[in-house]
Image (cartoon, rainbow over all chains, first blue to last red):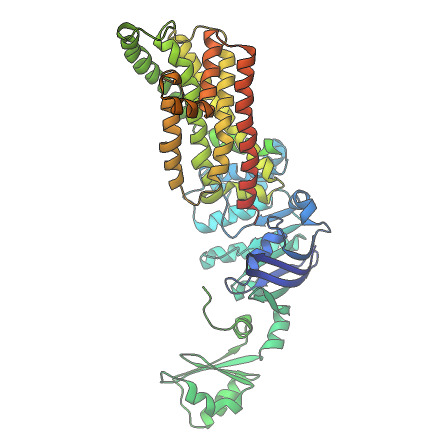
Length: 304
Length: 253
């Protein structure tokens, strides 16, 4: 579906995407993970054929975006990071005008609108003006609208950012259904739970480069341990404690407020810690998550 | 494909068309009554008139062209910025199979339609009040639409280069307003100092005013009219070329 080789995007001196290789196969859900400024959105805009690559090669649906942009876009669905809804039109009208952009007849797009409103659970709001709707509803409408042309490939740029947990779960459910019906999904996110829920395969981007690639399970196996033990001591600086436990885990990470011990058996490590007479305020043994991998790979420094 | 973009603007317009039609009739009515019959009575009686049937007959075709300019500029500033920046409808079009040219042409066509509506409304009022009496008013309406387009495309290019709307105030105050007052709408530009007269004759509005006025007053010559049309068309084409470039720079990055 997507084949990128040494794909690069530069804005003047700044390199947003730095020679990445990506292959997305038909029917899979593929994720781009990364902190803000990692180059996810720039990559998505190149795949969406609205941003010409500076260098490297890019093929989408077997076509070249530089020459076949409109015919590729006719087969894509795009959910941009910021909604591009017409807020003064009604929910239904937004779908109708968007369908017309793809050359659907009035009758076709009307039938399609009913189906999509149902899918996005917006039937009851069909004739409401968009402006006062909640963020979750607007996002569902954007997704519904992006499906008006029955796309083979759906691009979702941070589909659930800013939504409450209920709205996110509704959206995930809808995206699952789409995937089951054979639509290839490509999404960016900085929510690890979203990536774990939705993605068959993903790449972690940082500073315009791909720093890791694989399924969520593979990435955890490769870059983390099975479990993580979190220890919190009554101290402002946890560094002295790290030295006392460093041989009990594969890797120890010092955070401002706690220690993370990467280990295959959290409970056994916790027992060993207590066996040394250390008395943490709190002890938590948990499974490794994609978030551990992500923070390990992209660092804990804030990027603004 | 530009038709698909036009269809969007039409859908959008359906919510507000009533208001625009009412103001489309009212504002020419106010202008013609105040300037034409109010001020005009003074001009004709105490200042010897302008050598035409009457002052109101002189300014009616002028205002026809000038209101076309104002409608065109109004429709090419905030709506363009909104579709780029605020509601971002252009971005939605670009995610679909539409290209830059389709997006620009579709919206320009819509602005032309808006100018046509206000120009027809103005012509109806002017004819009803007896300010325009020639059947050539039909050609004058077309000339007014062309005048509007000569502003639409350059202003599209300008609007697409603005980061916020403060540039529009400058445009309205220092370009549109002076043109409205000094490009022959209310008095012949020959009354201006020679330098200003030369400046006035370069503005597209002066050509639009002259074209409309000569058509309805029966003073048009084929060569003169063709010259005005060609000059206005040049502005339309040059503006379009700039607008394509500005839109591409803004949307395809």
